[in-house]
Every structure is written in structure tokens, then in C-alpha cells.
Image (cartoon, rainbow, N blue to C red):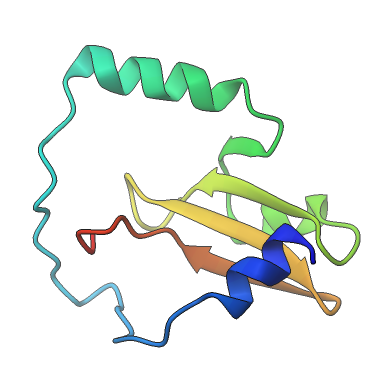
Length: 100
């Protein structure tokens, strides 16, 4: 099975959040040094593309199973898994275990 298809199959059905929904962050804030180290590590991964729009991400995906992780342009500080599934681009907002 391809990674993006696995992620879709394992996705749990839960409450749908929209931009108007307020979510309290319960994770401890990262120090500036830890945050920089995480960004540096992300930048070395071939699947990480940095900040880009949905449209830009969709243009990079060519075949079923292609995927990338990007920084959201509409939800600052959030990351999105974008993948091609059955010739259609899907965008999944990544949420940590605490729900943020």
C-alpha cells in the first residue's frame, strides 16, 4: 500500500475543525533553538516543501501515491500533508496527539 493511501485509510472520523473553531494549545512551546533545529531537519527531507499554497502543491503531484508535507499559507504554524489519491489531490491538516 502506498503511504498516502495508508494515511487516508487510517484516518479517524472525528469532529471537523474549521478556521472559526478555537483550539487551545496544550503542548509546551518549543524553545527558539529547538524550533530552528526542527526546521533545519525538515528542510533535509525530500518530501518537505516549505510554505506553499494548495494550488502550488497540487502542481507538484503527478501520480497516485505522490505526496508532500508543506507549511500552510492559510493556517500559520500548521503543516499539511498533500497527496494524490485516485487522480485527485487531498489535503490533510496535520494535528498532534493533543489536538492542536
